[in-house]
Image (cartoon, rainbow, N blue to C red; front, side, top):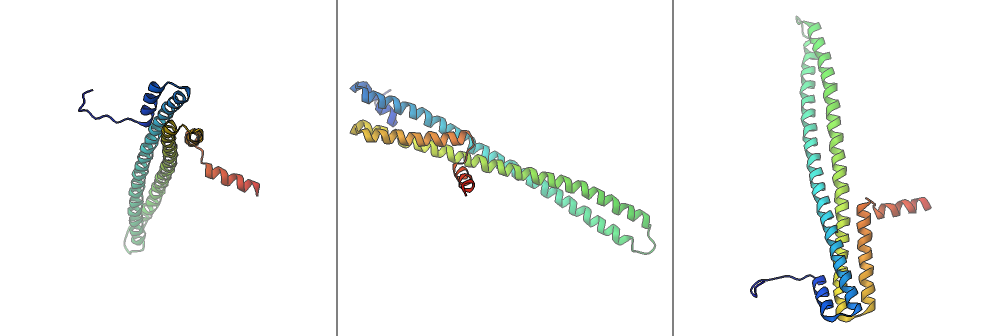
Length: 203
């Protein structure tokens, strides 16, 4: 790499570099820890992006089904108008009443099929909306997990400078919180909902 090129180092890069120059066990452990945390954070970031894309795709599918359902309801309304006209015609003098009565029955039958299809499309739209909300919630959990890992990496980098044990434990603690959020996201667990259920069961 030439002197004119610009390169950005992450906290774990500095940690590994420092460990290479220093060589003591404490620095080496922190360097390895930051490298592992960076890898875990990258995986969390990938999953967060994937679930965000899923949420957007599911929301789009919901909108498509909603539009299709709206079209069906418009079609249903058109059939209702024709049925009303046919019913009105049966009351007029000099018309073929059996013919218009048959049309009324035909429109009723057609409307029942159209309504069934419209209800089915609305249910599908609601289902896609639910999936979108679940994916978005999962995305937020992955984002929290990734943020926690990034904070843990920063704390580990500060640990290298200060060589404070409590700072090391703080980095491990924050990393553990991030991993917990990652597990919640992976297993589709909502910790707040689980807490509410536990409290409800206790009462």
